[in-house]
Amino acid sequence: MTSSSSPARGVLIAFAAYAVFAFSDASIKILHGSIPAYEIAFIGSLFGTAALPFIKAKDDSWWDVVRSTNRTLWLLRFVCGAVGAIASIIAFTLLPMAEAFCLLFLLPSFVTILSVIFLKEDVRWQRWAAVFVGFAGVLVVLRPGFRELSAGHLAAAIGGLTAAISIVVLRKMGPAEKRLSLYGAALIGTLIVSGCLMLNQMVLPTPRQWLFLASYGLLGAAGNILLMTAARIAPANLVAPPQYSQMLWAIAFGYLIFDDTIDLPMAGGILLIICSGLLTLARERKRGTPLPRAVVSTDNQAPLATSIEPGEASSPKA
Image (cartoon, rainbow, N blue to C red; front, side, top):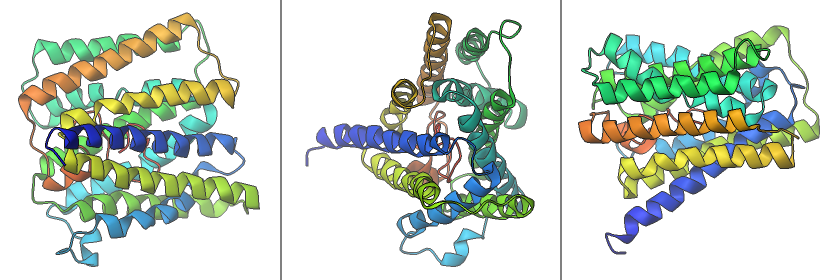
């Protein structure tokens, strides 16, 4: 294989990964809230363990799932993984898919703000301009005061924020952290938190519901594996932009399956949010922000990608 063909192949695999994530998210929406969000997160995480053998390196121990170079930050990722998974499920349950993605795609803007606050990064006007463009796009989509906002909108914003916190945590941890530990923190967090929360509200899934629960978890795991493969053979700055192809899948699913509609203001807002993310990505590429070596395979070493845990807005999946 030539060196020029490898990046192209990596980009194609990235497109496939984000398509798989979109199908995983659609599986949540097809359930129409018939299964509590906590239970979906728990079952999805159980199926998400299927990715562990592919994430484990040859010199890793299975105990590395719970080991860390920084226990405090590991626990923060533990919490963010659980909250992000549950919030994203609520968002996709209550909102049209395209609208949920709009808010989840605020991730780059949240990363910029949190990087200034917690990492003391020097952010120049170009990145701040991208932040303002992103938030302007959200205002155009939501039109507060002209339409009713719901818990789904809040959940989507929380999903984007927790994913951004995970990215900042990864940058803070540095290159020593193993990807098995990074994945394990969010996976175990989702299993424990959602498992405890669902005890008072459990529903026995029907065979049809089990099919979509399995689809949600297994497709999420498959998307993670594809994304790791893409990141190994193509530069991170090429792997991240295809993430926005999820919006096309969301629009298609909304039209063909869920009877969702997109009006002109929403289309304009979506375009602004995508432009904001791409502008941020371009600036991050120039800065060459260092991330843990594990993240090269799991988070694309790019500001648009979230961590690769089950249910975490696969969407900007992380």
